[in-house]
Image 1 (cartoon, one colour):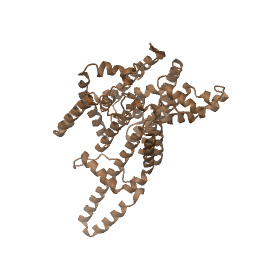
Image 2: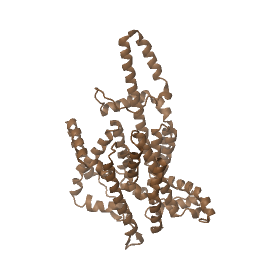
Image 3: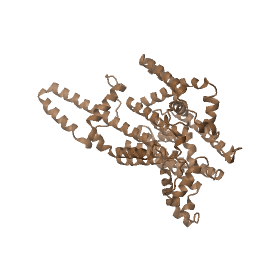
Image 4: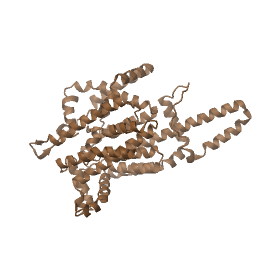
Length: 506
């Protein structure tokens, strides 16, 4: 099924890649930094580095490996006389074409792993639609780091889900080598797995204790023997860590569900008791984390180049924008009567705490928009990006306009957390939110590309299988993708102060 799914993706990747390379053969926008840098590596000049590039060279090494596999055939067919000649802009862009196929297969594999009862047909349908997410789809055809970054993160996550922790840590190192902020998503993957193991261990311990109590009621003389056996069974160490961390089963219980603070406390206490087992199991992750900390100290910060334009800033409004953009990207799942009613019932059931939470969220939203909205110079000056027009015509059209969106921001986030909470534990949802804050808030520039990884990680955990909803999302994606690609290819314009053709881009 995965091979069939990959073939479906190839059907639209190849022809559109050819069209883009024929219409825009020269590097464009950020490609003017990435393409020459990769070509330097193709020439064996690994000491060369453009100080305007902000991300590590992981993508360039992937391109080297990709071109190296094709070069013998190209040389034989006289398509390229040297390795450096083979590293044309079109060939480098095709790196992402290969990676997007792999990324799509990873999406399918994660969906089937998280929802094993889902049929292959429906899983394929959902995965195809998800792979057409406009921000991901568009940058498939340009030499940007986004596709490679997402692919590495999803591969790391899938390997961790399948308990291949050493391989997962290796893929995490690759993800960080492509984009530094992926260290947050590596930490997120690590935390979620520790949460599952800790709470799974606590649940199994409670079952064992209940079993002992029942046995003691029948035969009290066996209590000492059973308690001794239980202690031995709990001390088996790393070999039993995964047996104790079985996936949650849906069961009917009269006991109330644990709250967020109960789960946090349980994770902390259980993790502390299992600290040596967890350290041994996840040691490779900690090695990567320590290596990254050493890099930050050596580099004097997380950004490699153009540090003055990427200063860490308290851009709390960014987290608001992400919520709305991500909700709109799958609007049929969030903006419908059933979801709104479900949210209202949830708030009504948990009143007055839910009312207090809603008030706090609205106040935080207004404060974030008022005090922590950052208009980066790139946002204000570059009319090639759609965010330029969204900022001037929508978000900041007048003094009061930006405040009108706060209820929408808050609703979007509540809806996202509500859908995640139906399939994940409360502490998992909290860790996901905190990871988003850590990635997005320090970024001063509004770039929808930054939202791609958290968007995928959220959508992959939505347990919504309605054909109608996903079909509407698919139609939305096709329309948006067709519009943005047509604008990019066939609506060029010129700047009076600079030579060359300019094109609209995300």
